[in-house]
Image (cartoon, rainbow, N blue to C red):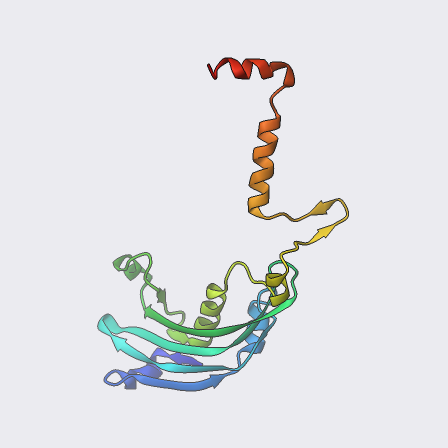
Length: 181
């Protein structure tokens, strides 16, 4: 769904209501080929309305399913998408300074509001850093190979501490007791 700002002029007094099912799978594969393996049709409801200074406000609720690779084994993992986005679109980049750094404010490109791109960007931004299959969650065995293995952060810290304790030269061990008195 792309809307030119001129098309949206007729919705100045009353917001444009969106209630559609979008199939963005091909677009998701093209833009995020290594991140999104599959994307179900998304149910999108919301509205686009004008606010002060001729800014456009996009409010949308998105529901669907996204399949992404596991962060441990790259096996496909299906995640539910149920999110709400609120974004403001402005015409001039100079006005970005008027907003907080945490505000979702974007400059309109070619006076066009591309809702499809906004939805995909928000889905990818909301993906967790650690994505595991149900089997990986149940079985805490980490991947290993010939002469290597993955360890947890906790195990790494324990190994690091043990290595630091063992670094003391045994010939100097008696000096270690000297400062305890």
